Length: 436
Ligand code: PMP
Image (tube, rainbow, N blue to C red; front, side, top):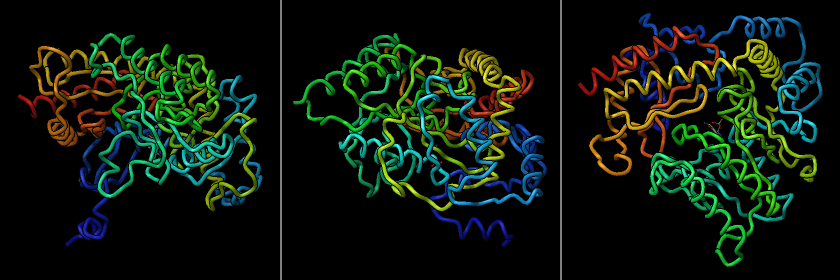
C-alpha cells in the first residue's frame, strides 16, 4: 500500500472533493495544477473561490515570504499590529464608501461558517429576536446556526436538525419557476411571499432577527438574483426594520464582475459576511456591520485564530492586485465569453438545460432532455459523470445545486481569453465522451 492509499484509508468518510478526485495534487501555478503523474489540470474550482488569483501568485508569494522573513508577529489573537492596520485600511478602501463609512469590522475564527455564526448571533442580540429568514437552496456553512440556515436538506439530513428557528422563503430561481422563465414573475412571487410573512403577524413566521441572503447562490447552483429583486428585498427589510445580512463569502472580491455582488444593485446591507478570497488563499473571515448594531459586549464572539497575520498580508496584497489589474472587469468579460461558449455547446447538447451566472461564477444545469413544457428534470447522475470525464480531460469542476445537477465553474479572476477557450474545449471533450 503506498502512503497515499494509507491517507485515503485513514481519512474520514465525510471527506468531499478527495473522495471524487483521487489524484495526488503536487504543483499549482495560476489556473493550472499538476498531479503526481505530471498531468496538467485546469482548476475551475479554485478552493470554491478562495483562490481569486489562482495558485501561487508570484506577488502574493513574495509578500508572504518577505513578511515571514521580517520577524513580525504571526499570530496574536485580536491584538493590533501593522499588518492588521494595512489589511483593514485596504479592505475599507475596496468597499463601497456608503457601506464602509458606517461599518465596523469583527475578525472571526477563519471560516465563512464562523463569520455567518457571528452575523446571526449579532443580529439576534441586537434585535432581541430569534427567528432568521433564509432562502431555499442557500448555503451558509456547516456549523450549527449556519447549517440551520442551509436551504438544501441534502447536506444537513441524517440526524441533523433542520430547525434552529430558521424560516425559508423562495429564492428567485427563474429556471424552475412554475410560472415560466420570465424573471419578473419569479421575482414577484418571491417578494410577495416575503411581504406576506413580514407584514402579517398571523402568518406563522414571527418577526425575524435578520434576513440572510447570497446575491448569487454558489453551492446552491450558481443562481444570481436580479437587481430589482435585491433592491426590493432591501426596501422590504428596511420597511419592516429587519437587518439584512448579505453573505458574500463566495461572491466577494471581484468574482461576479463587481468588487462585491451587492454593489450592482446599488444597495447597502446592514451586515456583510466575508471569507474565502478575503485571505488570498490563507484562512481569514470577518463580519462587518452597521455601527448601530455594535451592541454585543467583550468576548461575545471570540476565537483563537482570529489574528492570522500571514492571511492579512496575503489578503491585502490580493485585494491590491484585484483592484490594480481590474480583475472584476476581467471576470465580467471572461465570464461573458465562458457563458457564450457554454450556450453554444448547449445548442448541440440538449443535456445542458440552463447556462447562467454572473462574472466568473458560472453554472450549467444538466437535465434529462425532452420536456416539452417547463424546465426539464435535473440530472445529477449525468452531471457527476460529466464531472468525472472532465477530470479525465484535465478540467477540475464541481457539481452543486439541489440535485447535484449544476456544474460549477469558478476559475481564477485573472484568466485570459485563451484560457477560456481551453476550458471550453476540455469541457466539450468531456461532454462528447459522456453523452455521445
Ligand atoms: N457562505 C457561503 C456563501 C459559502 O459559499 C460558504 C462555503 N462554500 C460558506 C458560507 C461557508 O464557508 P466555510 O466553508 O469557509 O465555512
